[in-house]
Amino acid sequence: MDVLIETERLYIRPLILSDDIGMFEMDSDPEVHKYVGRKPVERIEQSREVILFIRAQYEQLGIGRWAVIEKGTDDFVGWLGHKLMKVPVNGHIDFIDFGYRITRKHWGKGYATEGGKAALQYGIETLGYKEIYAMTDIDNAASRRVLEKLGLKYIETFPYDAEPNWRYPGEPTTWYKWMQQGE
Ligand SMILES: CC(C)(COP(=O)(O)OP(=O)(O)OC[C@H]1O[C@@H](n2cnc3c(N)ncnc32)[C@H](O)[C@@H]1OP(=O)(O)O)[C@@H](O)C(=O)NCCC(=O)NCCS
Image (cartoon, rainbow, N blue to C red):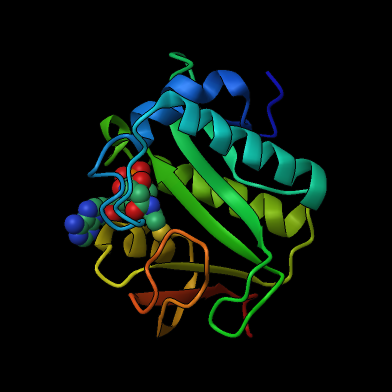
């Protein structure tokens, strides 16, 4: 396994095509999609397309979301990490967006926080990112809590304005930023 980051309970590595079953289980769940566009996938081929799309980002942009794997079981937990945003969002373009998605059976175990902390640190220390942003639905309390636990600072709420993407235009979206201490 091509592991990039190891935490106490998780491996983080690039997404591979054989993650399709885990991705499909996660993304066909309407609960998972409640705050991320409300368009769960219906066929496993759609999950394969997403994996290929992200793998193309690794090649073309040098970065993209990574798979999270549970140690011991090798279970697919979800994805997280850095994405280079090539479309303008809230007045920013070509910025690093930090995100995560966890399959429902693994919610509430602290995995988004544990993997998120390690991936954020990797972005700062290994990849040299100076500014990292994140956004989430204003009502997505679990995700907002994770961002707080990762140490990102709430900046503002804006009407979602990127197209095409995982939100509908105008949806109230919170904007967070990772800042170096003292900034
Ligand atoms: C948001 C998500 C990533 C959280 O993953 P997770 O592994 O369960 O998160 P963690 O266990 O690390 O932390 C969740 C925190 O939110 C809290 N939380 C969960 N549901 C909550 C709710 N409804 N209201 C307030 N806080 C809530 C938990 O108590 C925990 O905080 P704590 O450690 O202080 O108790 C996961 O629910 C998910 O993938 N949801 C669907 C996709 C999504 O919304 N992604 C984010 C889009 S920006």
